[in-house]
Image (cartoon, rainbow, N blue to C red; front, side, top):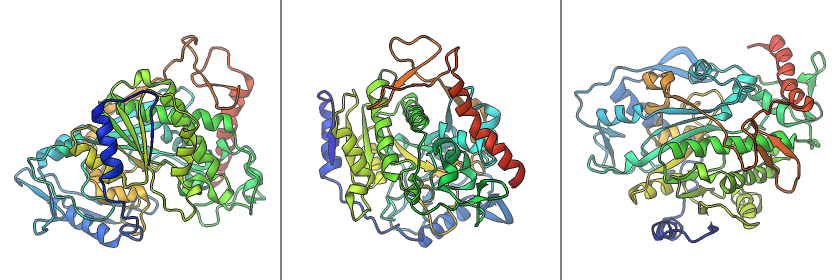
Length: 468
């Protein structure tokens, strides 16, 4: 447990930090660490019994993700119970509540002309129709947020809830995509953009001089490659990603933000030896935003990082990376708490304490909520599909009227720092005097233009050869 604050915070936040740190049971890190077969079947049965859920034979939303159909909601059913009516522990809800939660769905996306994120793109991407490369790359600057109750903690035990309890209405689920250094075909532009010497890192097809994809999804990394990161661009984008999701939470009147490591597990690049560097950079970017842009985050009263330690060597954990960065000094207005704990347990406790709270969902760049949730081997995103009401609220098949409604899409301009003109924003990297321009100034440098065009140029060649 670690607390960081630049000034005294109010008694209510202090009491909350004490409860979260000292009065909750430790996280059960093994209950849902495997294939989660029983939890998957439980969710399928719940959806089938109450919403007519049925998989469509040989039809997929994206490769490996089964499509399905549902029936119209039956408003004549007074109460729906998860997992079923016969369960001793059950979460009760009504159809009217579910519709209310669905209507809360909102998308916040970065307003950047270089990324070309518009309503038309979002409407396609949120159905799983983003193409590999540039379109998938844009999704890390898109934040989906809605009210979304938590049905179970990560111990797999259903939370008992009766209709008179209001705490589920105070929880928002924030679905965002991280940077993918795992080397996968759909996120090929992450490799092209952030690894300057990618041809030296991956085995190439000699006929194209592009990464080979032996299993149709993953690149083949060389043994112990010397990776050269495009650190300027990496820093730039990590800051923008952090700001967009915090801005979204602020706009939704969130008081306590529960964060976790986005893209800091299997996607952090352990197989090419950069995972520790990526975790540190991510922590530094978050710290930078909290120290420089909180004037635009006036509703947020505290941030809690749920960073469970699974590693035998805790010095390699995300928890350790974040505490090391914040131990160097923190001057932000918003107090910080970092815990080795179940993010569901934290979020539910915060909501029951009367705070409006958000929880982070590490989403996939395909833009489909829950992605591979039926495949018996879930990562965190899939586990959230099994433990929350997110499938019904944020999945485009269940909530087509709101997920694909362009009126629910909002575009975020980056804030301006002091002493900058209206056309640009300058960010200073930690321990570095180099400047990163976030919004384009009138006079772009040749290097900044080329750095944007090279990845797209390479991908266009790749796409023409290997389009799938």
